[in-house]
Image (cartoon, rainbow, N blue to C red; front, side, top):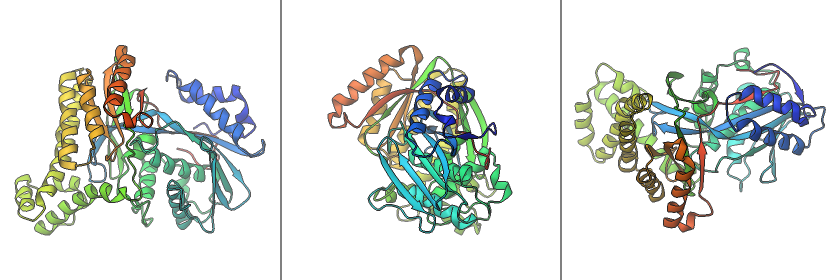
Length: 460
């Protein structure tokens, strides 16, 4: 961030918007002009007076290349940010409230600082209320009201982390414009990795650096989505671990290939009735560790800790789990985690680095198979999208995100990406005509993480 301050009137100037966006995305073909149009539209739609202090936020979605349900279990994942994003123009106001206006839907919700509650018939507001309640509990109410006018071109509930993107957006809006008087100094300037851990803890309800957690939004995930959204770099895939969030490696994304993403049209929700299915993989991971701790008289926290402990034996763990009722599902949960982290991800990174596409595809195929058979989080649409993509010549294809719907990425040669997109779309719509209006197919490239311009209260 550059430390500049802006007013809402400044952000209605197309020349300034072009300068700011170009500064943040100097090498991203097609991204600057698209973002300029979106930001200017939001600034014009913002109801505030032109003299109000204002800032810009661009919060991308993410693609989980590999690392299915590994982050909260103490493992690693390979991710990047999407070019699709949630954009916001944020201002301060005098009343003690947070106002969120969804420009695309024409929906406005006001959350009073005194009683920050979700709106019953609008599930997305639970994410906003969760962030605001936790901020107020830790740091007191912001000194200023905050207004967020936002829009998103991310497919909704697609597995591309629009929900985590909303958590990040609201957190940065409060930090950037709320003038939180009781905010500790070390929270006013944070590394991207540390902020990702904080945002992940807000969503899951976990403790963070001595700040006690709560129920969060009810889903017991980790910080993978938030790290990819906040920390990603253009034209690269990044390997992260999550306790704390730490970058372990990176692979340059070759110019010769592109992602084509298919949002299946099956909503991958993490709230309401979907929470139980989503949390089952998390519960099984904890149960595996609990049983091993009981056997070895240990107090390990995650499967990652367990694998790294000097006492650990895969053979003994298998014997232990298979000796109890339902232990086969627990063993499969561990085996998926173990192989994804120790074999699949390192092998696929090496193959990608060296352009060994057959090898890359084999690793990704195995990851998808484990998700279907051992995690049990796939649906016919996502499985079929993967097999269609492979039959059409994709180097690799995988469902990603929490599962139970959502999206699939396919890695294809850039020179035939448009043709592939058309063929993949046609085949899917032919097989699933009922998904024609809700499915969405598009090209994508690894993009930059969060950009934030115009705050005098917070910086990375």
